[in-house]
Length: 433
Image (tube, one colour):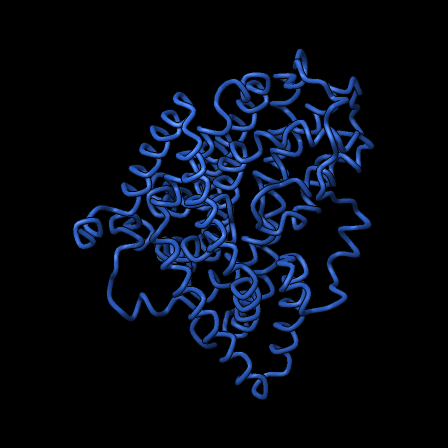
């Protein structure tokens, strides 16, 4: 049975899980089968929990190793700056699309919701909290609490220090490489469970939310999906053609397993090993990919930090009867480009939304109006995030002349999760510089 399943392409397995999950979800909701809804919730929740379990060690070791690996990359500083520049460019385009769609659709007009009954979410963000929250008071606490932003800060500092120390730090770097390889290997086992996790997550979403709950927010939900789709399937392909002289269809063929997993798992960091392997299969040099992908997984959030907060801010302003001006829209763009690290690759974008609302002076309770449908929105947001995290390194490598175009043109012809030669399976971590 297991060998028969392994012959089915991984993307097809996820699609089957998606279809079966939707069917079971409708069955549970139509017949009020609480036991089935609970089972789907448990299956999906366990899958996400397993992904989250790997996040702290994965983020720390991946960033430490990626920073140190820059030692062996020619023009590393220029590559890092170009990566950051493209992160900013794509984020600015994404937030502009979010604002544009918000102005065209007026997602909060005529919404029949009682804003007085909405409570502010328990997890909120402000610029003070964001800035003071970067530096942990207790490094152990950052790992225990799973504070990804603080873990990223610690990893960047430690990685930079190890890079400057040089040879004496090599045993520490090798230890991090070993831990990274172990965590990635364990995470690949979890990723193989993605079809089952998909069944549970999608099934529970359908059974729990249904159309009755989505109907009042249908316009907003549609606006978010349309905005993300425009960025994924219009903006990114145009950039691939214009900036990288690359065939977008080849890109999606190579990156689709990561995009698919991101959609169902709702975790950029949890998808990171698949994203990195996808990027490498697209011909991006391993040494550069090992830096750009982990960095992007924690800071590059076009869906969660650009499109969504722009639309949500317009929605909340309209529900509460607040008129936004040009300055407010510029503030939304600024927060999206600069504050995207607040999302830190975790499931959900509530912190980023509350950061945007607090910057504009809008009621934080407005975020509570959207909490009910957040999982539905987060699937498309995370897929957009991960697509951007794969697009930027591909474009930068193409412009630097380091992209293996033969590998790019053949990407997607072999299943990403299918076992291949042992050397490739084992060498998920960057090679020593």
